[in-house]
Image (cartoon, rainbow, N blue to C red; front, side, top):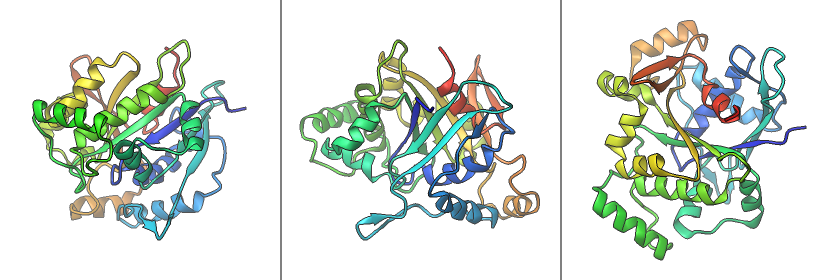
Length: 286
């Protein structure tokens, strides 16, 4: 019986759709984790995976009238190779990101979803490199003032600076995730990591957040409620949209060996081909 759950959290265009599409084949048991169930709405993920296999990233999930293309995605996972433990349920409650956006802007969320969030053991928090929806980072003083205003007047502005939005999401998780003897874990995923120049990639995910979103990076560093780790992720290893040479190479070799995770390890940047690495950390003890 699955007793733990991990939430996918992030605003619109933060990379959740393409992550889910790439995660499904990565859960084939070749990494540390594998799928233990077939999702009811697997077609949604397979359709987006087919975009990828044809050399395109999946389009950003939009609302169709009053209904999203996908309101929720759930898959059960566990350790591969017969290892015991690691069983958990991965839940993407709102792939469009509008649930999280509305929760930050209005401080309102349905009681049903709040109950599920309070039952979650950890989260993947998404932020995408060079998203067109990212609002330029502000200086510390202005950002802090906006964060205070957001807490006082939650209906004031739906176009918050990205680092203020992320800081509010973090605060939401601090107060909402399940409390046990250990701190809830949050893995921050910086998606489209391959779009950064070589120097920025080599500096590592922590340095990227410190330079791009200093307010958010400071909140991550000083939170006492959560255990946090930061990752950069490239789901296929390059830009299918803008790099024609890479696209042709990808179409020839397919998904095998594509994509990587970047982490900071003892002052240097470590690269792993196991795209389930952040999930494995979330499920690990301690």
